[in-house]
Length: 306
Image 1: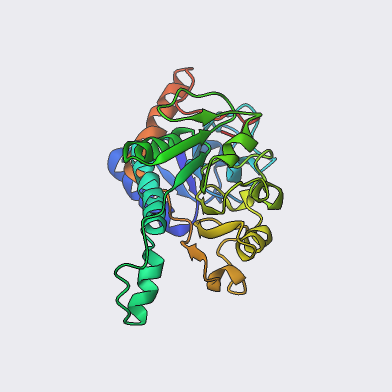
Image 2: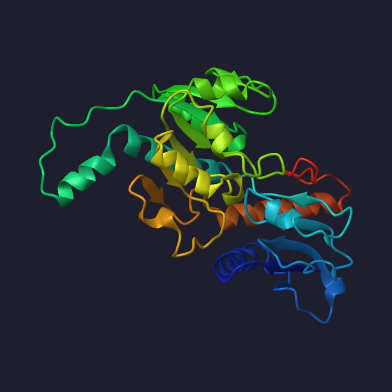
C-alpha cells in the first residue's frame, strides 16, 4: 500500500512532512511516475495532469487537497467508481471568513482612501464616513455560511443565497430568487463552488440586475467571473470596486488591466488556506473507512461537483 501526492511543490512538501510524521508506516510517492503503479491505493491531488491517475488500477480513494474539486473532475480519465473527497476543515472556514471580513471592513471604513491620503501626507480626519452596507453572500455552503453568520453577528445587514433553502439567522433566498437577492445588496461576496452552472456567473447580465452600485468580493474560482465584464462594470459604476482573490488565468498575467485598476484589490488565491495536518488526518480517516467498505467523509457528488 502506497499513497501518492500529485500537486505543486510547496503543498506537496507540507503534506508529505505531515503524512510522514502521522503515519510513517505508509510509503509515499511524489508525483505519478512509478514502476509499480498497482501499489498506489490513495492519491492526494491538486490540479493533477490529465491521465495522471489512470495507471493506478488499485486506487481506492482520491482526495482533493482543498475545498474545491473542479480541478480533479476536469480530468475525464479518472478511474471510475473511486470515491472522491475534499477538505472540510473548520480552520479553512476561519481563514476564509477572516479574509472576507478584511475585505468588507477595508471597504466599509474607506481604508484605501485613507491609504491614498497617507501617501499624499493629507490629514483626512472627517472626509470619509462609515459606509452603510447590505452584504449579500452568494453561496451559503460550509464556507459562505460561516462568513455570513459572523458578519451578521457583527451587526451588518446580511442576505444569503443558495440553490436550496437554508435555515439562517438572516434573510436568505434560494433558486428562482436570485434577482430579488441582488436587489437587496450593495456588497456581493461570491463563495459559490465552480460547476457548469456557475461558470461565468459574475458577468454583465448579473451586474446589470444590481439595484445599487455594489462592491464585489470574489473568493470562489476564477472561472466564475468574466473579467472584461468586471472591468466594464467598474468603469460604468455598476461596481464601486472589486476585491479579487481568484482569476480566469492564474497566475494573473502581467498584461492584465486588473493589476493597475484604481478600484481593484488583488491577492494571489490565498483567501482560504489548507492546513496540512488536519487535512492529512482526514485523508487517513476516509481511507480507513473505504478499506472497511464504508463511505468516506466529505465525499463529493461528481454530478453536483461538491
